[in-house]
Length: 421
Image 1: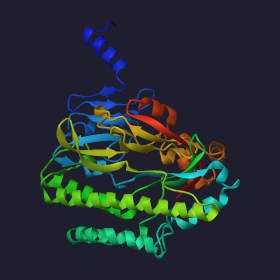
Image 2 (image 1 turned 180 degrees about the vertical axis):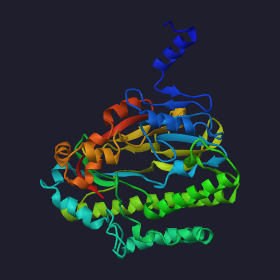
Image 3 (image 1 turned 90 degrees about the vertical axis):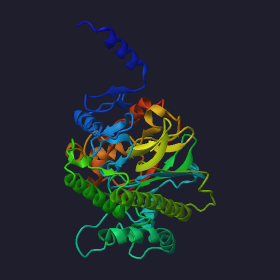
Image 4 (image 1 turned 30 degrees about the vertical axis):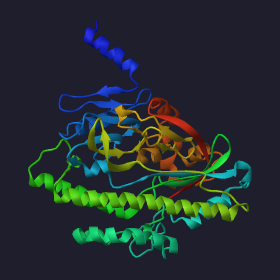
């Protein structure tokens, strides 16, 4: 079948662009940096639904680690004017990465890294204990003095939030500050291509952020019902700027993002302490440090307009701005510098992106597979972490290639120790 002139022109333009475009008649264009990376049909369907929302600004941008999420697709950048979709921000508000380069080199590390992993696990609460009346091992029994100091900086604004939304008071807040959590959250010791030692970690706003996210998602749904607003998906319920719920959410989400940033800083301090206990040598732990969110919302200026930019599984990558793109437990990770690509609203991916769900990964892979794929990494190698096996994720090299016009790689990291919840 012969292509029309317009189809030929579009095909040529697509070949020249770094991104593909999908769009239906109901929504704005969706620019996808996914060349060479598979995108499942459910993700496309979810993206097209989000693109139908009437307050999307210009277009949506999609990163190469894209996969299905709740409310909105993970790996999407959603610019809006006059409204926020709380489920697009998600419930792990402020989830993100922190990395710090030390003055240590690979030769300074002990031959056996088990003691270092054990020390990291001792100093940083991680995981979760289920069951009523049992102390959660992922929380502090008695927070440290440093955690208390950090909470003192956050508590006044938290109490203000609770005066308006009392159900948020009895949440995991103070005792989870400076703790890791579960799932894909981790603390790692890595080496770069110059054999320099890095500490890298991934976590967010823990239980209190989850509670804030779920609370305002519920309020947004009630607002939709109250005003008889039909949505392509109930999880796209939104809050309108200028309303009380919007103002409260904006304050609460900003607070949760500050909590998440401080949470990572405290864990980084603990990780440095673990290194100092194991390595009997003075070293500098802040040669270079990056602390960035990848699940959040912020006000930014794009194309001459102030807009609300929600990044759900995406990192801001303004010109010269540093970011972190981690691989999986046995894959490389990258410290990157943004190229300030306006077409992506100055964004890049937040990781490799899942290709198998957690449930599917546990069915597809075995402990033996996990052991094989994490060779050379001091980490857990048991059935409880099979859902984080490298094969559950897209190849990080393909993901990086697809976004070469968004970021440049500054350092390539390979993990030697990985602590999972």
